[in-house]
Length: 135
Image 1: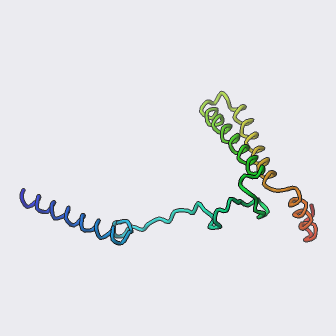
Image 2 (image 1 turned 60 degrees about the vertical axis):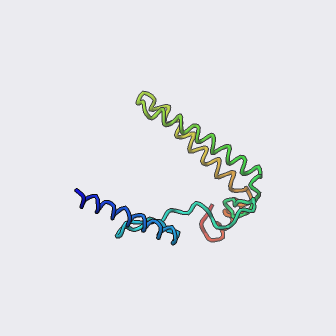
Image 3 (image 1 turned 60 degrees about the horizontal axis):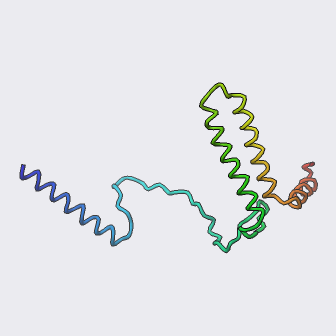
């Protein structure tokens, strides 16, 4: 059993040495043959100067009433989504669940209208007519 404890100690020393080496490289240890997954980016790389973009690309202050309205609509939709999840657990509420789904879709439409200023909609429709897309 002394040989097994010797092997165990040897493994521990090797692991400690690998950890120290990893700390020097500032990269995490990983098992050989395993590929690291690349995580999706959650930022736009445009910096944060207190501005954000609308659908049109127009930059506005994050304290703008447009973003306040978008946040309010999103929070409402989230809250309604919780109600939808509870209704989905009971088949007796199928009709109510469908109504809630329609409301949630309408709220997504409301958000898209808020994020797309009226002038941008008119400009887009004009472009479609010029390209022969109708409108």
